Image 1: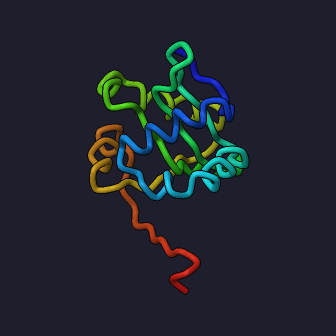
Image 2 (image 1 turned 30 degrees about the vertical axis):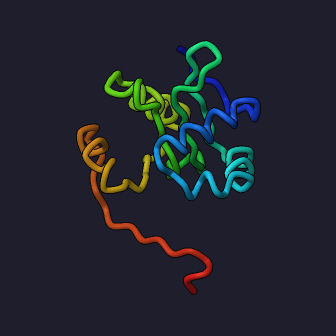
Length: 129
């Protein structure tokens, strides 16, 4: 297994992973997601041969904050430390930063097990103004 920078040739596999996870918003915004990957300062894939088995995407200012937008590991590859491997890989690139992320109700236990501290956060979309 290897971690590589995002390349668009793997994008269909990412969409399939999002579909399998039930992340329909990302699937419906396929073109926007592709642009997001292309413009994110953090966009890495975990490959097993040519198969994408995980990815991480986010942004960083390289000195204070690293924000993780998505972390996804294929269901049949979970519980093997691969999510931790991607998180650590990214944090190793920007060791001066604090890593911050939002967790869903289904992922919050995972991050708490990894000693991430909970904090309050807020979200608002443009159309909600």
